[in-house]
Length: 418
Image (tube, rainbow, N blue to C red; front, top):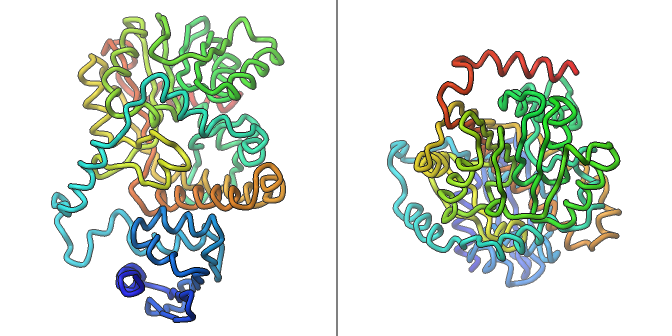
């Protein structure tokens, strides 16, 4: 498998330098060695690593790294993954400058097959998939998230964060950004689908005076969210339930869903939007915040499906809108957050590395390497790959909202002022 891996790496490394040291001592070098680009060395500790990487590059690399069968020198896993992804950004069309509308037939076929294999997330499987990730120790999430435990893309003022905004403020600004798009009024009833640890629901009640029902399939998140409502003395206005979105009864003036749609599964998109339509009042408004992919539908990579979000799928905007159009929900605003999640993930990565000892004590070294690989890969996907965040606003009635976006800016400024 050496010759196959050598051939692949010779095409991938276009700048900088990568040195590979095989198990038998054979050394190969790739890339022109630009002085302004990094130089990494990979050392394979057993002969099976090359075959594993060739068979499935991301899963093979991840498992070899997790099992300490692969050693990286010249930087950490975040640096290395960013280095490898840097030379092949989503925007790059390739050596032949393939037309934007032309897609590699093998890639296209893989996408079709991948979508055919996507699991249907029925009620039982949805709960099991959520538990796999979100029922990890609450101590883990407390170590790398902000104090409000916002496990989703924050909102940053610029791509390099030259203003020096911290994670706590960026997450507060994200909540204000979303609340402004909901155009909330005191006394309204809000449904929060996929409420996490309750931060968004508590924020909306505290700043806008609305009553919120937050729903989750994670027992660990439910315990924390309910206790937070009790501690704040707002349990009569902010309630949390362990319930599937398919079993909720309305109506609601507003629906908000942040970071949950990725777990719905394509076979259930139309059902999801039909239920949301029926749960909304005639003048209701919905805000959907989801990770999305540019360039059309795709498939979930094996590493993410096996270790991180089983049953998850990142949708293309075309898939989301096609499903909502079938169910009489009018798209009234779409925003693409392009680099915000990359900035967020880098902050999570810094905190994860800073708390390595605590995380290893909670789990073990292998889990720590798994988690850093997950964060590094996700960061590269948002910095150079095809991942973004979509915020899509919906209404049932075209007259339910002002016909310009001025109200969003005014409401957001007022919320930040508070």
